[in-house]
Length: 161
Image 1 (cartoon, rainbow, N blue to C red):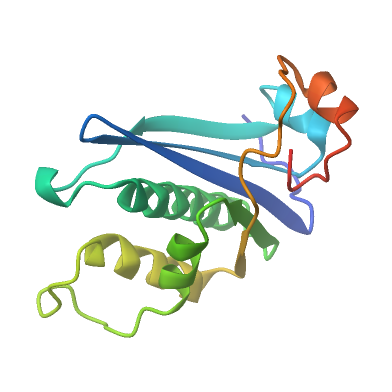
Image 2 (tube, rainbow, N blue to C red):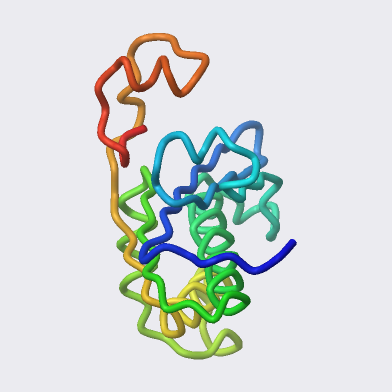
């Protein structure tokens, strides 16, 4: 794959799930244009389990894991393309976003807080790339949908979709 010019802004989103003591996460990075999300050549996405100590597993860790994974991949993409594009990212967990923005410790070994590993990774990533994390209300899609066209018909903003 050859190098391509990146636009001024990369758009990302992440989500998590927590069921039966197990957390998972998913994320997508694209230009923010709705049709790009449907094109396999114009977005990057992934999903998977959340790692960590079983007794500390929560939906919050899943959300932070998704935010961190999406941020790190954005960082790698920008570095690979020698780009100074901004990253705009949304997540439906306001607490996770607020917590990622308010990390005050700098060393993992001296901090007993749950999720400190992810907070520190996210903090380092945000120090190296221009990333804005925003909250978006979840589950706005009250009507069933199967495609991006169905979502467009519900008249949501880009962030909401």
